[in-house]
Amino acid sequence: MARFVQQAALSLALVGGAIWSPVSMAAEGGTTHYLPGGTATLIDLAPTQPGWVVQPIYLHYSGKASTSGPIPVAGTVALGLDADSDAILLGGLYTVGQSLLGARYSAGAYLPYVWINANATLDTPLGEVRRRDRTSGIGDLTLIPAMLAWESGFWQFNALLPVYAPTGDYQAGRLANPGLNYWTFDPTLGASYNNDKIGFNAALHGGVSFNTENGETDYRSGSLVHLEASVQQLLPVGPGFLGIGAEAFYLEQVTADGGSGARLGEFKGRTAGIGPVLSYILPRGKQTLVAEMRWLPELDVSRRLKGDYVWLKLAYQF
Image (cartoon, rainbow, N blue to C red; front, side):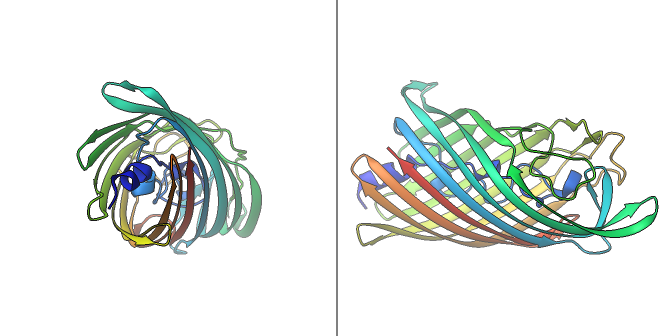
């Protein structure tokens, strides 16, 4: 396969963890800033060509928790939590022409808008009460002050530092909140193999999320380790290339929740799953358009909601 196809594909990056929804790991609200599918495939690699990348993303999630599994939510305890969310994210990256430490340097930002429906049985001083909340609004902003990409033959190595800022609306006692009301720092490393001669791609990314305390509830969610791996095969179809592959993910909370608001103790959890990935790359000279869809069902879950992630990622590089 032509070398320019590999270069076009490698120039695209998406950081989908910028979208927040009331899902994912244990910790407060049963969620964290990083979500499965955030950084895993060819479209998620750090850019290797100078210029801009504009990135709209859509995410849908629907999940349920067992009635026997309480989850701490915004200062209260929820039983049988059931949540659906949709989010649209718009962001981008700029890659400078000069190298830094032998790598291409990029920086960017991503802002989501989310719609959330959640219902659960709440533990109140007057007993258990079933309640439903619905809300929408701007979520937590993701800043990418540094994203580095090194190339060596068919290999690419990435390092990035997403920082999630609490810009979304948050109210203690509400089941559905567009924001989490705390900061998260998520240093991430990755390696990928991209053979343009046969169109085969494989990638592995891993990171650790560190959280500050939620001042409204005196709750500090524990640190989270996340690993995502993918394989894809590119095939020439029409004017571009069709990518067919799969992605697997594993997220686990490795330190206990803390603070006076952590009523359920350490509340560690995990999730793991695997699902198909379908993409299309359309190169046009120095410009490239990439579209990708992922379906990621959660298969092994502890102390969290269990459901399915559906991602639609677009990237336009120029």
